[in-house]
Length: 332
Picture 1 (tube, rainbow, N blue to C red):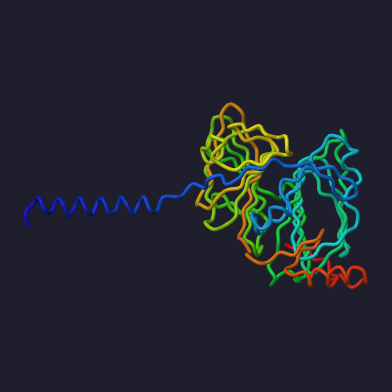
Picture 2: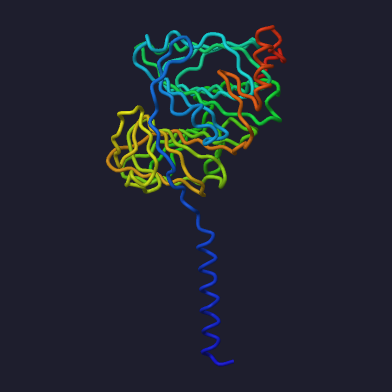
């Protein structure tokens, strides 16, 4: 075989290997939409900001709602969330500052304090209350996420997990990035919440100034970020006209290249999220989960698959037959 032909075969093989390597390269997720959280009133009169809710279903499947209840005015949060039912969902409460007193129909009670998390699976039904109290200076800060349950798990026994800040691992990785792992795994370190049907990941990430953070995500999973401090870029995107933008109200028309506090970033599909900063650092919640892909029938604190199931739930609540399980339901 002539040497020239051998050289061409080798070149063809090298080219094919290069193409195969490129095919295996991770795909960066792109920004689909940015939404600024909107002021709203919930519970007995708590003023908070809603990052997303009913109008976004099913865009963020399996997630239903994200509320931001950070406030420096006790008048805005002390009325709290008195006794109310839940069925068919999970509620995840993460407190950054202050404390939230809670109790439920299973006899559980306690306090969610600075850095703590309560992961509650309402399942077949629970009645509980959550009463924000703030800290000694009147500051209150935290978030509540609602995650849907598939039909196969909506009537499971309720359970909860209360996690103190010391049970939540915090990593400092390359480039000075710090990550609190509530649920998920980073470089071999796992968060304390596991065995959740929608395979969620819940991270609290801080990226210092002039740094880049790349995080792998499962293809096909819903992924979003909610910025809680500072500002930065997502997906190396510095042109805000390339994605959909939704302001906090009709007159909120400003579009900056940076994405900052109170902003929700929804990503298209891909294999990783890329985050970068300039002079200012940025802190954000990075959350993902496996979509359920089922019909959603939602009214108030109860989320089922059909209107008939909703009607049954509210009928049972009125007649006193709503609670199906009376155990403590502790998840360990």
